[in-house]
Amino acid sequence: MEEIKVFCPATIANVSCGFDVLGLALDSIGDEMIVRKTDEKGIKITKILGQDLPLETEKNVSGVAGLAFLEHGDYQGGFEIEIDKRIKPGSGIGSSAASSAGAVCAMNELLGRPFSNLELTQFAMQGEKLASSVAHADNVAPAIYGGFTLVRSYEPLDIVSIPTPDELFATVIHPQIEIKTSDSRKILKTKLTLETGIRQWGNLGGLVAGLFQSDYDLIGRSLEDHVVEPIRSILIPGFDAIKQNAMEAGALGCGISGSGPSIFALSKGETTAQKVAESMRKTYGSIGIDFDIHVSKVNTQGVKPL
Amino acid sequence: MEEIKVFCPATIANVSCGFDVLGLALDSIGDEMIVRKTDEKGIKITKILGQDLPLETEKNVSGVAGLAFLEHGDYQGGFEIEIDKRIKPGSGIGSSAASSAGAVCAMNELLGRPFSNLELTQFAMQGEKLASSVAHADNVAPAIYGGFTLVRSYEPLDIVSIPTPDELFATVIHPQIEIKTSDSRKILKTKLTLETGIRQWGNLGGLVAGLFQSDYDLIGRSLEDHVVEPIRSILIPGFDAIKQNAMEAGALGCGISGSGPSIFALSKGETTAQKVAESMRKTYGSIGIDFDIHVSKVNTQGVKPL
Image 1 (cartoon, each protein chain N blue to C red):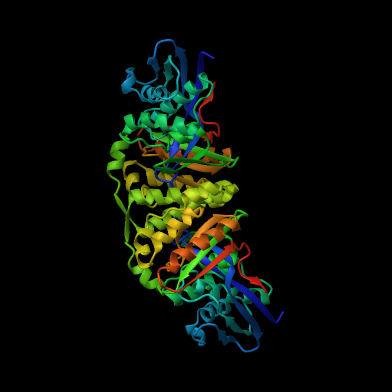
Image 2: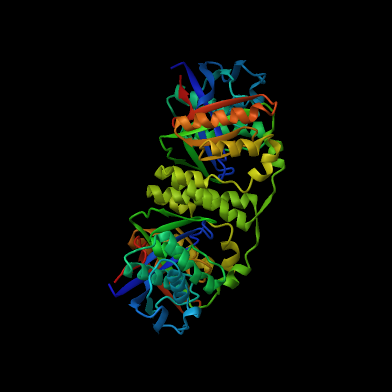
């Protein structure tokens, strides 16, 4: 195979109680990317549609992730990349992660899968480092593995796949304001009380158990965030109203996607997820900021051929 | 049924990464208790073997738990309790929880199970409150439910049963020094860094996933405690050597049981658990403090008839 076209999923990181460790991949929101082998060494980004992003390899997250890929293994050629960028940068649904993950997964396919998902995650994390100065894995891991992933540890990197209940749907609203990940991290407190910590790891354990058992009620009860949401939600106009109305519309839980400004809700069944979308649309309609709303199944495949 | 004799299991709380939320029940260590119905109202503790503990109902944890039981439901009689106390108080393996849980489970059996495990846990927590001034559930819940339990939340109380892999064995060494739960809590820091919190909830998620999947390696990798162990282990003579040697003997993980001084290790298979016991015996033999060592399967039933 000389060329491949892939879907690069958007992702929701943190998922309320899993700050910096949990993430999930979406199915109906994502970039498209064409990657082709070249005799020439290195990575060349030949086209970017949809967004004004740098074509220079070292300044583009997929370029940097691709370079990390090329540094390993024994492939002597290079790659060309075309990106149809449909996820807006700064939206909080893993725009940079989609490009980084898409590039390395596509390259891996073209070479007959020499690398494991864990290795691909490590390469893609280099793209994340370019985007936000920290090599996070909580968006790239679900984009690569699909479904829910847990970053158990960074040193050494340890990624755990968590099963996805069949009827779980996500609703995401993206208010068209930009919050940079780096800014959004700055406002976080560097310490938390032991009591808050206990609540958080209790909830994370509950969420993981709920996902394994397809126990939607337990999933809902566990979708609490006492660590980050109380602080970050201040940056997102209308957050409290969106959340309250989403819960009243039947969502299992609702929180900030990654570092925001996108807000996600999880629901049992597409019908409820659509009702939640409708409640978000109504709530945000009166605020006067443009927004996009998506309803999506959880994508259990990760980056996939188109 | 007018009378029942039950086994009241010892329990390991915290289990490294699950401070205040996780616990597991043991099978070969526990109290024995006889509970019988009486026409007279109230709880009467008629005999305590093995330990010098108060017979007055209000001063005895099983008495207090029993009173909480009697306050609910419509039973008009009372109960007599005889306790063969084999778990030493202050050992860190849920001595008070065994008595509290045993009492309410036995009473529930005698009355035809009017109460759920969650309700029984709430009654037994009153015993814990007497013992350590805080109504903890991380020992009483596994004693009642059996296996591993997660206290997802206290307000409202939400207990989640986590499955137990078949080959999981615990080794417990109890150095004969007393550390009171209340003292052991006092030395804990009231705050932790966000970084430490992230590691802790990453590990807790990993442990829960490992238990669901019977993934012993993942269980082992997740048995880390960066919150409590670095502080509490100072109170336990020889902790570092015990842990190092247990790990070298093949344990999946090793940590402080509850508030100590007992140290637990988890292993895959009884043979390894016995090797770990041998390594603990050797390590502690040179320290000059008396000790007990137990090897036990995880008890998946909780309090059970004898």
